Picture 1 (cartoon, helix red, strand yellow):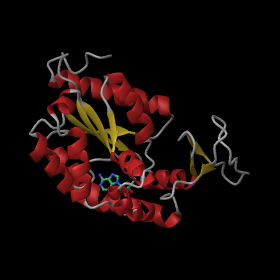
Picture 2 (cartoon, helix red, strand yellow):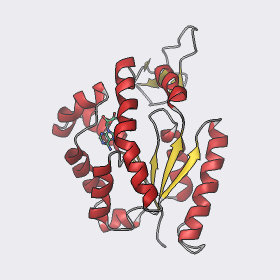
Picture 3 (cartoon, protein in one colour):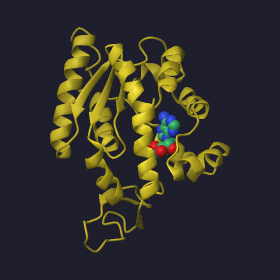
Length: 231
Ligand code: AMP
């Protein structure tokens, strides 16, 4: 097996990263690693880490860097995990996390960092309308002003707002993105690793933009071979 792609996807909460990352990871044949998903699983399983971070998640505050870094080191630290490639979603999220990632995994910790750009005024109402099935995890959108369906059409499970999609937590999370993640974007840009993709539009359309940019960037980095083998 040749070398696999190592990608980082950044973007505001509600930019559609989750949906796009699942598809992109599948296309590139690499695991999708979402720190949000990993942390929510720890909370759901009531592990010691889960108990420690539960309040942070619910209130929309960032989990302290050292806890997230330990979790990521456990998930990605082995030579095997590195060789399998990855698509990181929601990590790094602060400049300190980005620098730590490159210190631990070396200069080529990522071949590319992609910013999925959707402006705040577009993501805010999306987050407020977002509903998640507590059974199967399917994500839907509540109709504006209309009656809400509280049962999942896929599995009959209960459909609810994510605990951190309250108005207060949305406000805090979006403000944290400006404060903590924008310096990280600048840092990636200075290293020549950052590319920005317009994330506004239908999911199909955004995915086409994303794959065009990723394919071109990876092909130029690998001299046209290796990183794109798994299409
Ligand atoms: P997400 O699903 O990516 O929006 O993440 C949900 C929540 O998990 C965030 O609001 C944070 O509380 C926590 N979280 C996820 N990733 C990170 C990270 N890299 N650093 C700190 N906290 C994180």
